[in-house]
Length: 112
Image (cartoon, rainbow, N blue to C red):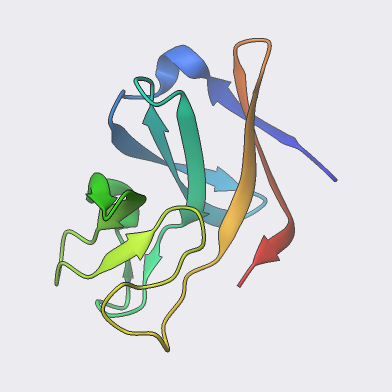
């Protein structure tokens, strides 16, 4: 896998999302320190046809971590990219890790 250094863990906003440009791809990164979890999904909202998912509200639905789009409020699973309201819609998810205090993302093997 090809990991791309994106930022310091200190640059992330706890319990919120940020957008990073990784190899010309907009990636929404979500950091949940209480759960010790970090997620990376595509920033593109297929319902609103715009890149805004990093600005969504995070939480969970039946224990599944999710982000609610800031536009039309569809919910996307942060682990799989699956839309909770529409089984036919899924956004890509990316590998993300913290390595010596740095956030790294890989677009290799993105789940579509």
